[in-house]
Image 1 (cartoon, helix red, strand yellow):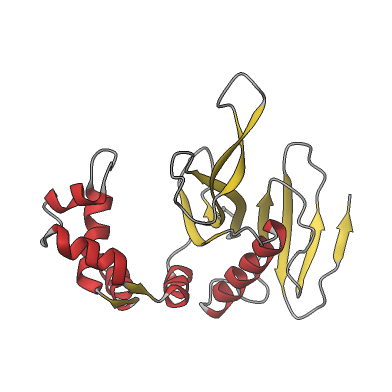
Image 2 (cartoon, one colour):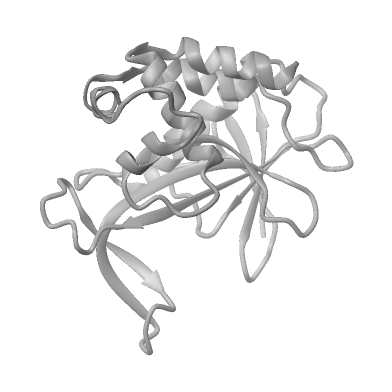
Length: 225
């Protein structure tokens, strides 16, 4: 029932070439191995159209991104034993070292790809916000993503995206007054944490964990360790 409603809601977000985009999504999710070319997906059973419709959908399809974000905010979220929502924010690159014609590539900081400690490889950095599962698992519930451009400040964009996610979760009834504070996990200090959210920074060496309590109060640290 939840999956059926989610599929209907996602389809409603497709404003142009919806059938082609929806079947392309199904084909991509059902593909058992890596996808080397979009046209390969036209051979899957989930895609009922030809390769012309696929490229038509990719070139001329339209997605209402803001509506899709609201759909994601209404989904059942993973919670910790005390009912707390834990969000993680991070910037992850899609490396495009050989795509010399791709616009707005940036040099992305990457670790562990060579003998040196780090490298800078051309690619597209994306800022993610996801809800975390409890325990040792790699499963997350992505709630927002935006590609960073050459003129963007990664910290400011991440803070704005985090603010938007929290507001949508509140609007969807995922958090109410009296619920446990949301916990925000980051790999670096947020220089611009979202206004209207009170911030506390527990002391940790390997990561920074920020409890956020939604509310109208001005943004200011409630505790600093």
